[in-house]
Length: 624
Image (cartoon, rainbow, N blue to C red; front, side):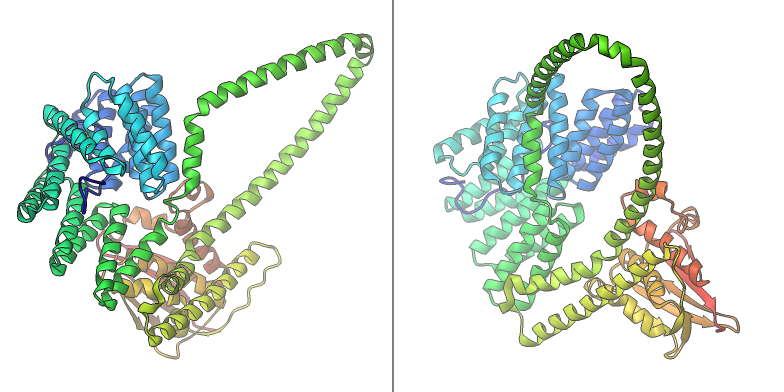
C-alpha cells in the first residue's frame, strides 16, 4: 500500500457478506442451538447459510459443511436465494484448497443473484472473485473485479457492504496514492461505524495502529495492534487473529526483537493450521523460514521449509490458472449462449429451406420408395439398438474395473510418490541447507522409496491379473517380520514426522506361506490407515500368535476407532457404495484386500470401538 502503510499491512482478504459481526462464537452457538426449533424450511436454510458464513472466520471446514446441508434442502425446495448463498459459502470454503471449484461456485451464485436482482450480493460476489484472484497472484484481474464491485456499490441503498469492499480495495491496489488511501479509509470506517460492524472496525483500528507505528509512535502503534488482537479473540474471529499475529511478527522483526517476532509467527502458524487457513499457513511458514535462514539457524529453517513444502504439496493445484479461465468464460456464458442460439437458429433456417426444396423435387420418387426404406430402416435400427446395448454393457463393466483400478492407484501410490516429491524438493529449494551426510541420507531414502514403489506396482499388477481367468495362485515361504518392515517402508517419513512409534512383537524367524505381493498389498493398506488415523506420539503395535493350526497377526492403532456398524461394513464396499464417496480409494482398497485374502485362503477381520482404536487381524493356517 504505497505511500501510506509503508512496512506492514493487514494480510487477510475479507470475504463473506456485510452483516455486522458481534461475538462470533456466541452467534454460531445460538444459531446451532436454535436449529431443532425452526419449523419453516426457508428459515432453516437461511440459518444454515448464516452459520456457514460466520464459520469462515472460525473453522473454514464448517463453512463448507453447513453450506452443503443448506444447498441440499434449497435445491429440493427450489429456493433460489438459499442455493446462491450456499454456493457462495462453498466457494469461500474452497479458496486456496481448490480455486477451480471456488470459481465455479462463485459463478453459480453470481448468476442466481443477478436473476433475482439481488444487487448487494452481486457486489459481494464480484468482490469475492477479485479476492480469489488475488490469492492466485493474478493482480490485474483481482483489481479489475474489486473496482467493478466498488463502482456498483455506489448505487446501493443499503451500503454496509461498501465498507468491506473499500477495506479490500485498500489492501489489493498498490497504486493508490496517500491522499486516496486516507479518503478511502475515512469512507470505509464511517460506514462500519454507521452499521456497528465490529469485524470491519477491527480492521480499521488495526490499520490505524500500523499507521501510528510507521509515523514513529512505535509503542502506541504496537499497543493498538495488541488491543485489536484481544478484541478479535473475544469475538471469535480466528482468521483476523492470524492476520494480526503476522502483523505483530513483522512489527517486532522490524524492531530487531527476533524472539518475540518468531513467537507471533508461530502462533499464526498454529492457529491457521487448527482452523483451516492454508494461505495464511503458507505465509507464516515462509516468514519463519526466512527469519531463521537469515540468522543462520539452519536446522530450524529446514524444519519450516519442510512444513512449507508439505503444505504446498497438498494444495498444489490451488493456483491453477485454468480455474480462472473457466470462470471468465462462465461469467460471460449467458452472452455466449445467446450468440450460439442465434447462430444455430440461422443455420437451422437455411437447412430447413434447403431440405424443403430438395423434398419438393424428389417427392414422387420418395413416395415410391418410402415404404420399403421405412421397413429397411426399422430393421437396421433394431440391429443397431441390440449392438448398442451389448456395447454399453461391456463398456460399463470395463469402466467399473478401470475406476476401481484408478481408485486403488490414487489411494496407495500417492504416499511413496509424495515422499519422493518432498525429498526431491529439498534439493530444488535450497540444497545449501543440507550437509553432505544429510544429502547422502536423503538420496538413500529416495532410493529405498523408489524401490518400494516398484514393489507396490508388482503387487498391483498381481491384483489386476487376479481379475483375469488365467490367474494362478502361487504361494511362497516368507519371513513375516521382514515382510512387515517392507510394507511399512512407505510410511516411515509420515510416522517420524508425527512421532508415531511402530512396535513389532514378532519372533525373528516366523515363517508363513502366502503370495508375497498380495500379502504386502493387504498389510500396506492396514498400515496406511493406522498411520493416517493415529494421533501424534501414537503407537502402532503388531504382534503374532502361533497355535497348532493357525498363525494370527494383530495390527493395533490408537486412532479414534469406529462403531460396530462401520466395522461390519468395512470389507463389504461395492461399486455403488464407494463410487460416490470422498475417499474412494480407502474403502475400495480394504475390499480388494479382502478379495486377495480369499484367494490365498487367508482370513481378515477387524474389531474396534469409538475412542479405543482399531485392531486388524490376519490369520492363515500354519501347516504347509
